[in-house]
Image (cartoon, rainbow, N blue to C red; front, top):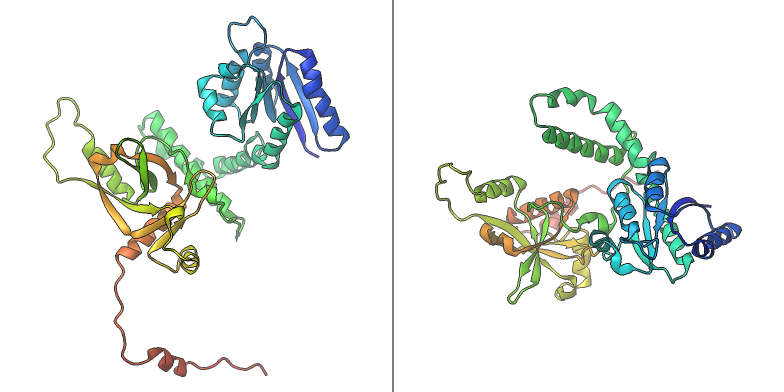
Length: 380
């Protein structure tokens, strides 16, 4: 039976009893879960408790008193969003007072940050936390969770040998980036290999994409939407330009420093991208071809599977196009394909472009070769 500890910011005793304490007693009586409620009635109490205890989630009212000059719950929600890893339920009658940066979390929609009307059923709020608990995400991210254990292995077993190399006049932010990159590489390696045997679970479709895109710089594997006349965006493309060339183009487009001599004129610069045929528009692909694409026996196409974050599509390597670098700003970065899948796609595109035709033989070489192959020995 799950055990949850929730921080509750609410100042109305009757509401606490009817919508929170009563459902909790019912859950425990029916053996659904045990819920410990840590109820506070002020913003300062809530912020103090966050520093003192570990919680599996927080239930926050926005406006605690009728004459308050601010929605105090916003400050607590912002603090959790900035410094803690736990699901948050906003339960309020003043949804219009939710801070803009928090409202975007409720609009995604997010499994971890939800808005609930205060006039609703309190059981719905607890079901939200139970759904999060069933995903095991807290067991990964909370203090003492799996992610922390993996990080501990990296810290004690792998970081030591490189630290002296980093203490050689590098800027502090560069040192931190290098440590972070080194750590991420090791975390992935640890997850891929459990002891001496492979222990890599099959990917979910959602693991193929990062939506929205990370950072501001374009990169290999980005998913781009082309502009259309009159505004908006249309066709989607997968950027295949190698990372080294992306960096060269970026530096070439960067204006020279103030006072530096002008750069010599260079030929036009291009990015390379492959059109993504939407699954809803892939009418020329029949069931047999789709199986070949999924199994990667059809070398012309590559499937981008549909997911919760990206609708998917089919990469058609025949539709490899050049995009003038100056036009990139007109395209919208939808997201990006994660690194392992990007490398696979780029390698397949390279193999497609460099393919060579095979000469045909006049003789029936299959039958000739088959006649020479010895049949397997029969068991005695």
